[in-house]
Image (spheres, rainbow, N blue to C red):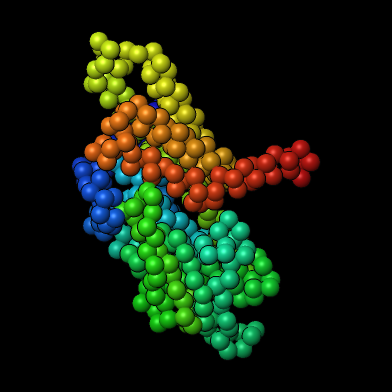
Length: 391
């Protein structure tokens, strides 16, 4: 991998090299087969836990490894370089823990996090519904109070979630429901729900274009009773909790897109140095060299925005605009670069015998999940206009 490593600390370089070696030896070799079979390999997640990756960006005070978020982006790049599907699974696992770290009580953190930080329990983030994707405030999974209205003892969850990454494999779910559908965003509330809870089951598994070895399935709640001790934050804070976590998640996915795009760029460059036509290697053709240069430009720009967003988070600055810019730019770059890689491979690029067609399929999803890129345009525009208005 030829990613720029300038400015990294010795600790970050060691982390990057360790994850690169692990990903190349253990994740990459089976990536095509897992994609073909649409099979999640839980042993790889377990290995990432043993390496400390499943709790890497969290403070030591809660049991994490205490690395910076910039360091976390290095991990995501290396995992995605080997297999975007495994990177997405790991990213969502981390995403599902952030709200517990930030909003959870001491009791909730002590009960919920250790097994997840260690990689012994896999997490999922359950927000999307059939009628609530980009418009998260429109969710309809109901949370009916059990007991006194002002002091409920539990909540009964009824409804459906769709496109939930890691669903079926994960043991722990951060679920967003509403205590009052008429209240919109003010009714959304967050809950910690374990697989196997009565009234909670898995529905249809999605048959996806890409990222096929990481599951995405429907969650079905049929009067699933969740104790008030498993409510995260207060009633009505759920959307705020979700959006606060998605900022970190978008930087994580942006980093994964950089890794995926870099893998496609490297594969295309390698192919052009090996394939001969018109009396020489394809790498001698100026038009093709220009394509490679433009691909490299897009990867570098995406990486720079991703690192800038991660460093802003590490400084404790607001990251809504920076994370949207990074995710939007990096996912568009991944789609563009992987498509160009298929083109540079010619007919071979269209074959499942070569990895670039899988990379292109994997890239498409990143333009949709963690907020569509059209939503990110709106977020960025809102921040630009607020600055102009002096708000």
